[in-house]
Length: 282
Image 1: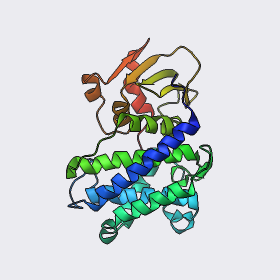
Image 2 (image 1 turned 30 degrees about the vertical axis):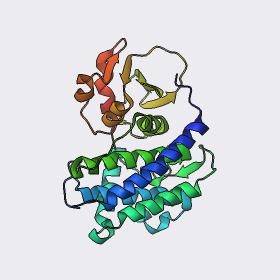
Image 3 (image 1 turned 90 degrees about the horizontal axis):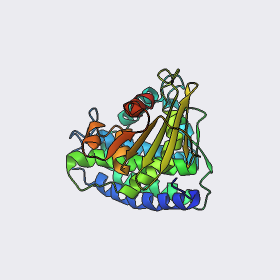
Image 4 (image 1 turned 90 degrees about the vertical axis):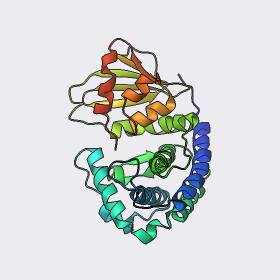
């Protein structure tokens, strides 16, 4: 068990986000070619930057109000989360023009600072509406902060992989994202059709924490930190960055396996690859 304290971890996540916002703003200001391909197969570097602008707009609006001006682009709640988010992302990227993309560094810096200022002193479990994940979806502030950090770190990496500035994700940063985000987002990203008749219990042990019990049954999944002892079908042990990159589709699973950074054990280790088919990456 990783024995985390939610208040302390939320404070660490906020401090890390503040530093990351400044890094990201510099990265966006220094993009040499908006049309260059990014680390994502469909988007240019400028498209990734536009998506980040939409992300910061969304999370800032979530804590300040003001969804009314752009709620019309929110997808309906029908269908898998990955498909709905893909549709929303494509529309958001389309709406951010070339001139606006040149100013995204300043925009992200301003919206990030607003998010942190408005949420200063609020409890980690403060509710935050997130209608882009579903019209009635409400996150905790801790999860929302972790998600904004994850979007910043991973999409910063997507841009830097092609534009070549230094962009590292530290193990402690990856641990914060995994601990703050996964217990909420894995159930939201469940592929219900694939999970309908599945009964599997995974023990996910990230080196240095967090420790997650991911249990499928009855067409649902629960994800719990510091779960009481129980029998598991499959145990996955991984470095923080390896699990983060695999979970968010930034690297094929065979690569960290070959490097010894991710391995499966337990009674049924062959079930490990099935996890990424049951939980889709938005």
